[in-house]
Length: 449
Image (cartoon, rainbow, N blue to C red; front, top):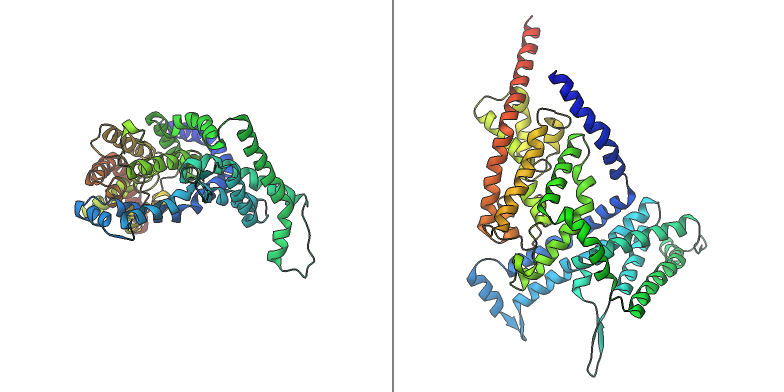
């Protein structure tokens, strides 16, 4: 009876989730968005590092960097400039990466597609003009950064798609074979580049002449509300967390399928919190967000998908108590160290967790617990909101909790949840351990006979 139930549950997951997950994991636009956002990671981490330096919670330090200056330029303002010049280009660089990835998936020149997409991004983005004797034109960081990410995604996909269509339909300028390849690619990109940039020039003209404002604000207004229901609410985040674990359970990378669709919302929320933190107004009353990219990476999925740090610590406990099966003793050193750095592939496929009906309940429950508790303590003010500081997803918990909230209470909620995650996994792990020890005893009896 139990076996039929297991087959039934597993069958439902494989029947209804597997086809969807497989289709989404191969969907070229989602792959392009994932690759494009990955391109921005160095900028995000560098910007976050200087954000930490500018706001490190030691009064003597912040007073010192505010007082040190040269020619009227304070060290604090330089740190802020570096943050804006890296993290503040999230939308623009993401646009380049998305267009490049999308074009390359159709076996065309991704670099040229990305450059054309960047030019198109600048064309549709409203400028800032200064008056005086030497009027100048500039671009606002707001629309170049996370606030422009939606537009960056749209332009990246359109530019990459149109570019590859022109090239693959041979609507391009061909140069003689004697011309260096780099020059040949530049001329090949001329016709599609002219068409794409002209198209977005027409979009800018439409918005300017009709008084619609600008495309960034319009797209944010249209997309932010429906996507925000999933990416910026507790209920929606619980759904995303559940789906992430469900896809992982059938052997498909949950983050690549589910998180990629919502990640732009989390990054935009992180960017908004960064601006508020720089202004000293990081509160819910000023429009700050609880759910951000660091919230998901560093508080929900500690140890990786399924919050498996609790599982590997449970394995370590059994080993230290000399109650672990030989399989778990072998697995422990291979999973604990990677788990501390949020790398859980050894656990996923070595345990295994994939299609392991015994572990599916804690695998789904642990990250949902983390989501709920972290949301509550941040909503009630017991733990500060994430400041927009982005640390690497491989940053170990406790350290990441402090860095992303600029508070030791960020580390405390991580410790609390790791303990609870371990307790959630432990009863189910004991069942697996008992089964493995029984199997090993049977094998020993067979060898003895």
